[in-house]
Image (cartoon, rainbow, N blue to C red; front, top):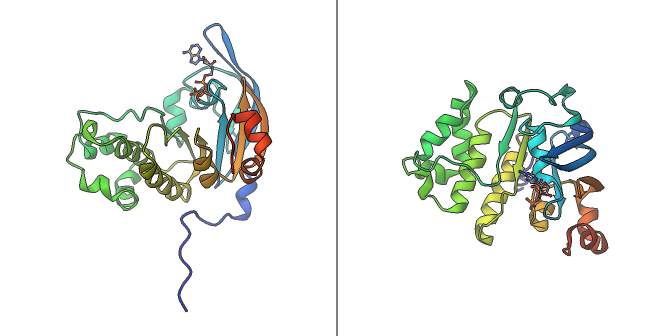
Length: 250
Ligand SMILES: Nc1ncnc2c1ncn2[C@@H]1O[C@H](COP(=O)(O)OP(=O)(O)OP(=O)(O)O)[C@@H](O)[C@H]1O
């Protein structure tokens, strides 16, 4: 009998419903603007949760507040530990990884040097094999300046840097943005591998990508949560996707 193929994403355990991230009544101001108006939502452990919404809804602001890059009031806990009010370096050292929207690779440095700089823990050296297994192209291109990689390869490097460290929660901002469809498939497959390793909160404008990766969804509109639930339900409901996202899902 042929063995069943290994799933890209680890099977969900009974702990899947346990919240890894809990956001309660989060308010954030940017300059004069009151951008987040008391957000409350949870991200279940060992799953991918998509954070969706139209342009300007407050998705990136939410990620920045979780990382301590913007001040906020309310509560943001990971595995019960309060992040709000802590400095970003401590939040990152505590296992909150971030893949920013604009990738932010060091253009002049090689791929290998970018990875070396990202290593925060002694385990990172061992995890380099895992990263090269997920992204063989980064091994092939290890001596190449990161600024000369294609957009898709730079995105893979940005995800690889985050994967080098053991994360409790990975925040990923618009990984498919600006990429050709064929490259998006590679990035999605890489994120599926990442999802087998860690809990992910994913901001993604491409609804199909979000549907492929995420089990759960939180939808923002004007800095408030207007919907949360199963991603499959949102994707299948044209009226909901039109109302909240201005696109049609299925
Ligand atoms: N530096 C800033 N100063 C003041 N207001 C800002 C700043 N950056 C963003 N905003 C405002 O905060 C609101 C939320 O922006 P945010 O970038 O979080 O939205 P988003 O949902 O991630 O949108 P997009 O999909 O366009 O990236 C918007 O109204 C935006 O104009």
